[in-house]
Image 1: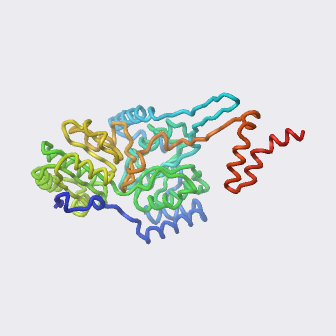
Image 2: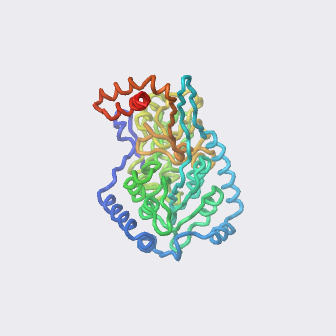
Image 3: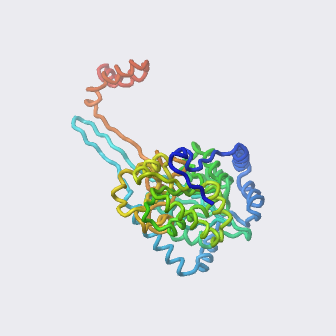
Length: 428
C-alpha cells in the first residue's frame, strides 16, 4: 500500500528516492572499461557471453539483417513508428540554431559558428527491456543537428538477435550503424573504440545502473547526455481529478523499475484515499505487478497539501523528471513551475503521450537535475566556436589596454603578444 503524508510530515528533499552508485558497481564498471580498452572486440564477445548469455556471430548488424528484421515488423507498428518520428522531427526542428556575426566598425568582426558533432553513439536498452521509442528520441535530434554518423549499440536477446522493433526504429530514425553489444562494455567501446566499433564524440541514451556508471566514468574522454537515474513521476492534482486515471498515470512509471518513484501531491485528502485504493486494484491487473508493486510500496508517496500553489512549490523543490499538472486551468500555473524535465498540462495529457508520440523528448533529467539541466535536444548534438577578426588599426587601438590588463595578472608574455605587432612595425 502506498503511504499518505501531510506535507508537514515529510521532508521535501526526501520525497523522491535519490540513488547513489554503490561502490561495487563502480569497481565492476571500471574493470569492464579497462578490459575493453585492452582487448577490444574480444572483450565485447566475452562480456556478451557472460552477461547476455549469448556470443554473437558478429558485432555489427549487416544491411541484409536490417532489411530482414524490417520485413518482420507488423505494418501497423511501423506506421505508428513513422508517425511518432514525424512528430519528433517537427518538434525538434524548431530547436535548430545558427551562428551569428557581429560586424563592428573600425575593423572589428566577432561571431560564433555552430557545428554538428562528427559521430555520436546511441545506447539503447535491449533484451528484456526493449525500447524502440528511445531510438527515435535519441537519433532524430542528432539527425536534425546534422551529425555525420550515428552509431547504435544495443544488447542481443538470448537467441543472439536484436529486437526487430529496435531495428525498425533505427531504420525509421536514420541510424547509420548498429552493433550487437550492451552494458558497460558497449559504453566503453563507444568511448575508446575497438576493431569494429568506432570511437564517438558523444554518448547518449538510457540504461541500467551499470550503463549510467560507465557513462560517468568515460565522461571527459567523450561527452555524455546525462547520468540518468530511475524514472520519476510527480502528479499534482486537485480534488476534481479522477482517481482511476491518476492511479494509471502513477503506475505508468512504477512499472519501469523497482527503484522508480511515483508521487502524487494533492489538496484533497479524499482524492488521496481514493487513489491509494485504486492503485491496489490496478496493481493486481498488471503483468509487471511485482516490479510496479515494489516501486509503489518502497518509493511511492501521496502528499496532502493546503493548495495547488503549495503543491507547485513542493514540486519545484523536488525537480521531478515528469510533472503532471491535473487541474482545470493548467496554463495559469505554468510560469510558476521552475524545475521539471517535462510538464504535462491538464487532465488529458498522460505521461506516455510524451514517452511515445507527442514529439517532445523523453530523455529527461532525473535525480533532481532538472534544477539545472534540460531534456535531450538538438543542442546536445552541436558545438560552438567563437571567432574574431581585428585589423591592424583596431588592434593598435586596444593593444596597450590588453597589455595593462595582462600585467595586472602577472602574465608578461601575454602583454608582449598584445604589443609586439605595433613594435615590430615601428622597427621595420
